[in-house]
Amino acid sequence: MMRLLHTMIRVGNLEKSIKFYTEILGMKLLRQKDYPDGKFTLAFVGYGDEKDNSVIELTYNWDTDHYDMGNGFGHLAIEVDDVYAACEKIKQQGGNIIREAGPMNAGTTIIAFVKDPDGYEIELLNKKE
Image 1 (cartoon, helix red, strand yellow):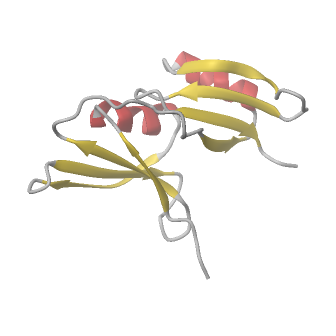
Image 2 (cartoon, helix red, strand yellow; image 1 turned 180 degrees about the vertical axis):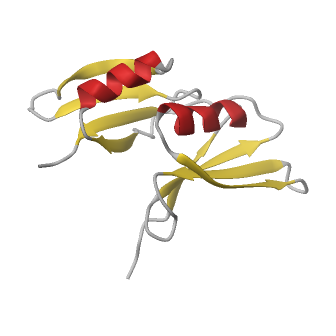
């Protein structure tokens, strides 16, 4: 059996990223560890325990304060009960909605997009019926 454990993204400001994922998107900081010999810190955030859920690994290299996005990475996706309500809450908390809630292009699924502090895009999707 195989299981997706985590997705790793590099971040330029660990405190700002942890605050975004925990306070704005409602995840929990599951664990965090400094690696002084390698000059980096790893922080894992998610909606539940790693033994049962896929999580996000935030990698902070102490000597790098930003990264270029490149054109290969698309987005992370998060299921929410109500995309419209989630967007309003995210905006009230200072989050950056880059695509308002509404039907996807050439489809009917309601989606929206938010950007994290490093520019990573996160798609919000309504919970499937």
